[in-house]
Length: 355
Ligand code: ATP
Image 1 (cartoon, rainbow, N blue to C red):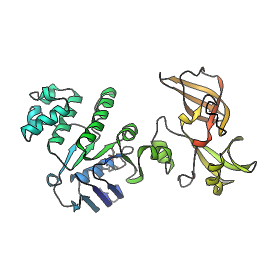
Image 2 (image 1 turned 90 degrees about the horizontal axis):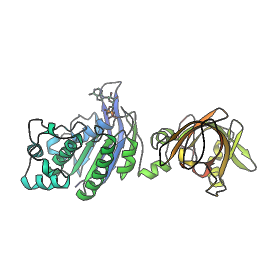
Image 3 (image 1 turned 120 degrees about the horizontal axis):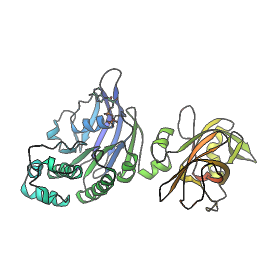
């Protein structure tokens, strides 16, 4: 198996369209790395350059110790699985998987498609087709697996099943895997590390929970997590010797350790960020850093295991994710608690995280 290194990687389709902009990334041997970002951010182009399906405008790609910039795809020792499966329609599953009998059998059994070897792709469900496409990648015994949105054509339930299967497969094969998706849930659940991209630039690289807990900028904070983080325009002011977030007169004191990091922004405008799950319906946490405020329930969305509330307060609108046991109706005024230990602040100009 092998590590993959991208050094100052650039892809220009034209003077105006720079799809990938000076990307630097080291993917460890056997690591599962997910490239995630909105449509057009350059993730597929990055993967296609690793595969050798797209020319590189500048920079280098290494697979192991070897620069592969000019190595044809078939000699890169990679296998790619596409969103649209890319199976040969006239061939059976058996023939589609090619290569040696023994490898075909083993990988068909790993994927639970051992009974389907005589069928043609049109006789298979979407999930079965994707399994064949993954099986075809396994039999090549590549050093690196590349996945381009492999689950996006599947329905929601199957996607969750296949997600778990791919996680198990990675453990079993112990292979380097690079996986592209626009779905932040897939990124969070599958990646050892995730790479968040925007407009051709890497925004942040890290283990999923690190990116979730410490987003480096407002874009990452808003992209990772669902429902997304709330952003409220605020001002930092001094209060009782501490630092307080002022939301149009509503005052939310920062806990001391947070206040320290925010001192440089005293008497300045900031973007205040709080995740829906950090707005609580009861002061159950017994933390000194819960800030209470009264809010009106605009919309209620019971989801069974949780309830999503759209709330308003003094001209601000925000989303909370709460325990389904909480009793509230539309238009009720309720008390909610911001967990100030979990809040974020961003610079309104640079969008970089202050804390
Ligand atoms: P999606 O999830 O929609 O595929 P992506 O993040 O994978 O998005 P890319 O497909 O890598 O994004 O595209 C990055 C940028 O490059 C986009 O602006 C896209 O329009 C542009 N682009 C991609 N392929 C080409 C091409 N063959 N010719 C010109 N521009 C292209």
